[in-house]
Length: 398
Image 1 (cartoon, helix red, strand yellow):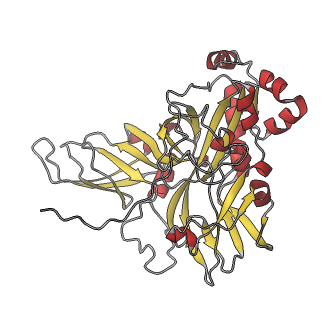
Image 2 (cartoon, helix red, strand yellow):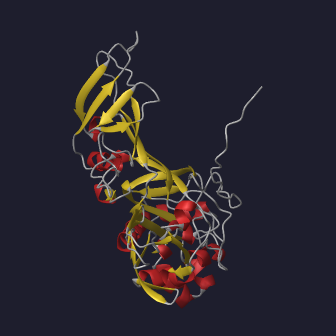
Image 3 (cartoon, helix red, strand yellow):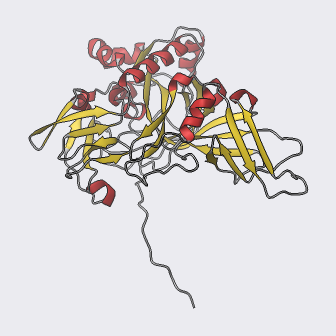
């Protein structure tokens, strides 16, 4: 029906019709699928929540004399240095040196890589301490200094796994409180937690990865970035509902963007009691309405999206494969689900309100002609299954 080129021409002329993933639902119901597909050019999707598999590459430039940094700490948080002389990679979940972690359970995890990343995006100063073994070309063996984001040559957020397509609803059947990456779970199935924007979430609106793929332009914390690859643990070959939407994890995206262009409002460090540190990020992705089938999938409702309930006291940590049922996002967003005839309080680690605001911001960028849609250079696989780690005994040779 439409091409990327035709849609981008309308965007550049500031004539594109753009609706958020929430707005398109009623629009399709009112206008009908065919008419809506002819009128609407882009649907904006978004999410905001913790994304542990995030981090950044930083380049400091060369000091005088030069140093080949082999160990580095940023505000006492260790960075990875197994790359070029003054490049480091800082992971969001790395803890500050000396943090007791869960030695005194549950740990507080007050500061880690995510907090350093948030400080940098906010324009605050961060301390660098680096060590080296020394070489003829890089004679300096130690460096200590302060820097801000502006002082760096490059600060590139590079996230191996963001925007999970769908995810578990976590509960706890045990007789004690447990602490997980989905938050604190009360004993006796007293609460349930989840983490998704549901009908606003990017890959739930493009369940078969028809428009979101490698090379897709994305809005990442206010900066224009791209999908640079399939995310780690991407698994397109999962159980799906009748509408094609996965009822479990499914696909993931690897995202990158320039940190110097980011808005600190959408980069937030998170301390999860008893679990660790994470980074909450805002992500927005446009879906070009190329035909009515794509629009039909982008008009999915919370009531038609199912999530699987998993017991994090036993079944999740031991990978038993057992589940406790499925619930809709409409039920989850109501604040209460029914589990085995029992009413269970439900809460989200992601923010639907912030996701909607991001979808609106992206909509405004497109309407103003500042954000075009991009054709993926490679589709994400739909036939790949998740492969667990097999624990093998050592082999003997000879």
